[in-house]
Image (cartoon, rainbow, N blue to C red; front, side, top):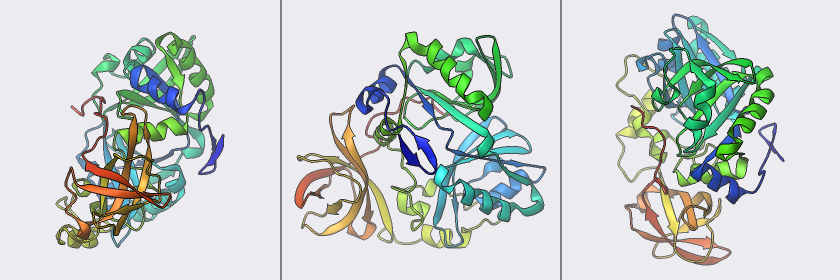
Length: 363
């Protein structure tokens, strides 16, 4: 157990590799209650969120979600988010635990009286079930609001629902989203229901191989899927364009938004300006860890590893790295090196994801 943004969190239960393989082959259950849950409600909620973040939440239909980013006036990232539209005038904004209070304050300031902003993180919980067996495990126990089968829920879609286990009925929102690259669901529920729901799901999923998953395997899973982590790969000194997320920025949406002027200028800058996030496969002997230097063909330091591990699925080291765009082009197949304990270890630029995603298509 370790401190994680003020929460006591497990690094591992049975072991990182065993848990990783369980999610890839069967299913894993994650306690993600540390994630911040911020509700935005009111007739002006959609337009207010459009002005507060870089994406366009107003374009969502109720029951749909989108990945988004909130930036400061200089276009620098404050946090990455997932935004769910629960109803015409009701949204759920999910942010990282370490940034939750900051994001809630920013949304409150930016939205003002246009809508009500409520940080319900202390009273809310989040449990995820991820892996190829997730649908089979949850289907007998989930009743969607529209009475359709659970598997009808598309990727990045959500529904109000009830979990019915051991004669208990738990109100929740269930979404076909996740952070592993596998198919799966995230269950948003009241904190008072979390412990009993966790134990019940572990019991009913045991025969299908459901296992509890800690922070260690969560990190190896998300890295194999090419999903960046705020604080490592995404940082407050970078814009969305510096990490390949320019596609998330809706410069063409109606009205203005915080950071728009800076991001318009950044979007039209030369390709060799700023930073770039690249994927590396280490071909030499050694693991590229966070903070290790990335070296060009001539041995010059051109960047830094932001996330790195040994991939249990591929059997080789992989990494994400923040590099100088001017040292490019950073095309797939380029040979570079990583400085590992004062030695230059061979690596090459590869495409993301490292392991093909099997999550439900967004549909």
